Image 1 (cartoon, rainbow, N blue to C red):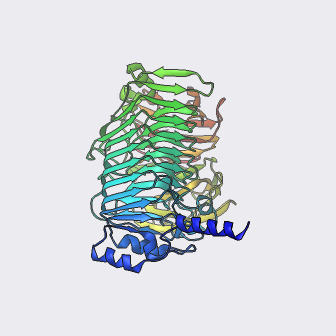
Image 2 (image 1 turned 30 degrees about the vertical axis):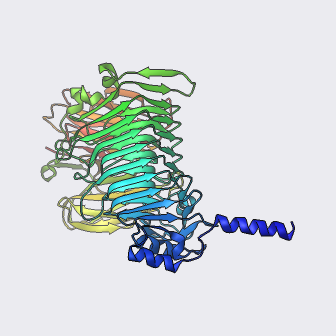
Image 3 (image 1 turned 135 degrees about the horizontal axis):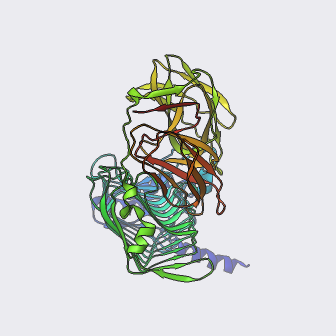
Length: 600
């Protein structure tokens, strides 16, 4: 290559990256209000860390700020956006998280908090983080390192961007700590969300939301690991007039399109979500909906699926109450046409008529799904059945996952002794949060370090005879309680319990006078389970194999005494996640038949 060639190449590069030199004279005109459009490079650029320059440009509040395409990405620490500004990434421009930073669990690449009149545009441009780095040390496990976080904002447009490799969600629409608990008038258009850790998009709260021509693909890392998840955190939050149109989810570790309304209740605003001309391809589950329908928590609303195609997923549609309760649920799922293509390429068109609803949404038509739940059992007058108080017994190896609560009974003011260990799930790191022990009144009693992989003895001192709660927050791993010298049970009075790969036996105590009761069991798509139920006379009354969706055993009349639940591997599918719930009687799943109690 001769000198002339070098000269021509240098001239071309100079033209390509024009404006790379700081322009304080133009910055002054921006600050005076003379200029309404600016380039970020006027404030300066540093290929190693451009945070101070790009943040200063944003803080100028110039109405239209162009993020130049530079010779390398804009490498930055977390940025804060402002109101009344259009942020335009030039074609080829990239804002990239600084590698080795973002140690804080909630550190986001670009955050708008309580802002209005926002527009972020970037056709053939990107916001990018370092997903794989955040999944290992020295990073503490987190699902909140979002790429674009929008909190209680209004009049928002996001379009054209590639949003990739976050440590949380590609886009997060949530609520700020103060102010309104919703985002208003948001449009997300022509966006690609790729390789994010928790969701492509999470919609926590939004009113008047349009997402169209958007792709959410290859989410993997932490549940739900969906393409998009509509999931409010508080009853005051809303999912109102939310429309997805012409969108595509591809190869997500979890669901393509999912809605979980478990934190809403009867006082919440009705849910209104529509999916139009959307496609799921190769997701674990194409579409799912779940909520909590305990009395006072049932929510009005509609979810509409129109002209959608669900292709090559392990499970096409899951519409049930898989997280908690069965009761009067006012959600409806309608569809003019749903196309499901299985892995063999066969196309099936379904219409959601009454027969389809009975199969996929059984709680809307089946009175057995509306048995009352005993949410506040009378433990003060419980009869304790323990022939050897203080003597340790071996417990059934039931592995609780994510979270769970054990109820234990102290016969006197004494140390209660247990053993247990964590069970690894995939690549998830061990849980670090302690076991929290409280009285039934919620007053703290103790915090116990959570044993890790090796079985380990632990204890807490009960200050008086009575019942105590041991609550575990396991994140995504599992835990097994292996021995106890006190009566102990899994508590499902306030929610179903998730188990993983647990073959063993649990017991139910049915009190005298109980008219009927129900045991509910669910798998999760191809994750199935085989469960049997025997009455106190050892008669088999229910035997259900390959449970993938909520199934029920309803007993009328309910014979009093100790009932036996046996959990084993299914004959088909894989043996992983399953959930258990009880209605009509106090929801205590005992792990040893030698140490139990009976509520009146």
